[in-house]
Structures are given as structure tokens and as C-alpha cells.
Image (cartoon, one colour):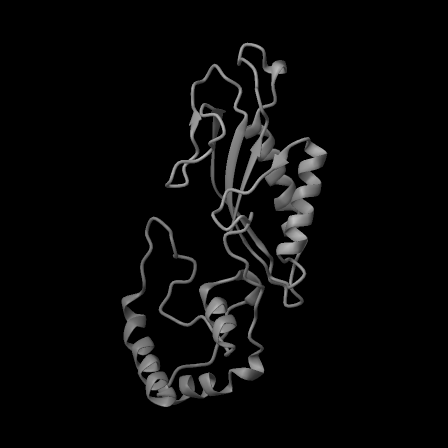
Length: 220
């Protein structure tokens, strides 16, 4: 996840758009270029890298030498008559290939920012544009024999969803952290996460519970 502010000092009045550079508009241009760059990175299994523009904030700097308060919020004026000279974007990028990493993103963002004539600055306490830096990850199917056998022993078929329809998930984070195979397994329906009607199928709970029970007993 990344937080990138873009700034232009001493911008102008909204009645004269040509008197300044709109940082929010430029931030959107930069994010479109970043999204295009991310989309070019697809894993050999066909998994696309994911780009999500999570939030954008901006306005005119109204406190000298201070962009943020202690809570990390931008200290800017949001009056409509001033061209915004700073914008902050938060983006979640989920890489499907090791080629899409922090170094590659940093190089591309800085190059695109220079092309657009904007300055990208740090907005995190660590002095880094990146809040998190986690590599793309996938567990080869030949490492999942034990899990497949647990499903069979529970009386469930071994079926895999089309991997090209998935992106980077928290299961990959656990696999990377502990250097173990990782899978996504649970009650359906797939694709309901974070939706307005997010739910699980009641009929899936008992079979999933039986698999979880076998897993715990097997690996305990």
C-alpha cells in the first residue's frame, strides 16, 4: 500500500486556472499511468496484478512548513476558490509477479511524476512512500497434496477456482511470513467479500467446519 502526495507551492486563484497547477487533477493523471503500468504485470498462471485507488485528499496548504497533524491528516484548506497545491492518494497494489516490486514501482512513479511535472513526497512516519512491501506469491499445486487428501477424507471433491480470477490475498501474506504453503478455502459464494450483501452460504458451513476440524487435528 502506498501514500503519495503531490505538491505545487504557491498556487493560484480558481478564477484563473492557468495561474496554478491543480495537484488533485495531476494526481489522477499519475494514478492512471500507474494503473496502466501495474496492469502489464501478469503471472505465468494468468493472475493479473490488481490496482485499487483507495482514497484521495487534497487542497491548499494553509500552515507553513506543516502538511500533517499528529493523526497523519492533511492540513489543507478545502475552499473552492483556491487551486489545490497538494494531493494525497492511497493505493492498494497487489502484485501477481515478483517483477512488480517496490523498486520497480518507485522508479516508474518517479519517472511518470517527472513527466507530469509534479513532485512525489513521503507521507509516512517511516520516511517511505510505501506503507507495506509484500511480494507476489503463489503456492504450487504439487505442495497441496495433504490438503487435498483432507478434503477427500471429509467426502468433499477437490476442485480449484480459476486462478486467473484471483489476486493477492491475505493467505499469501501468511505463506510468505511463515514460509509454508497457503490456500484460500472457505464457505461461498466467491466474490461476495466487501460487497453490500456480503454473506456466506449456510449450507457450506458444516462441510467447511468438518474440513477445518480435520486440518487442526492433522497438523496439531
